[in-house]
Image 1: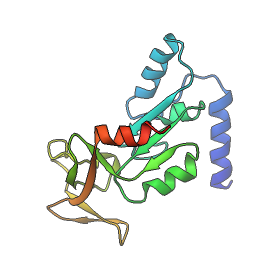
Image 2: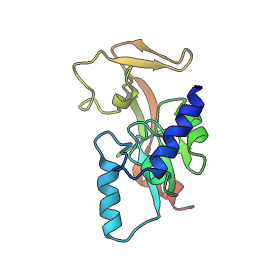
Image 3: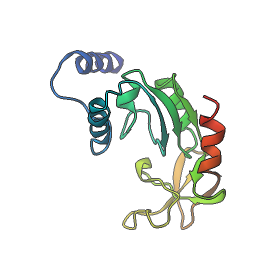
Image 4: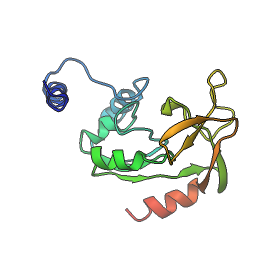
Length: 164
């Protein structure tokens, strides 16, 4: 059976078979938030996902997207925008860094992209450090991260969210 057909069947089963709820987030954060919002009577909305990583895998917002929400996904890893545009066409996706200060930040990329970070403190110490190579699309082992220009979070929200 072709993989596209299998994916479609899985999607149909998830949508129509009421056997629990499927979490897309790493630790079920999407379901916790859905429960809180449900208790408040909030059924539609808009999200901003900083460090979005992937349209569905470990996503805190894909659960909501599948229920009609839309939002802004932000991730610094080159190439993520293309995947988001294909899988989540209602959303706006931006490839950039966002932080508490504007400037050039070191980006630590790993073979497991869910671990990518701008934070030296959050960088997993037990894993080998890698630098993303946009020319080859792979991680090259190195001791220093690639640098990216980062927008200040207040300016980012004013520029992006103020116009929606």
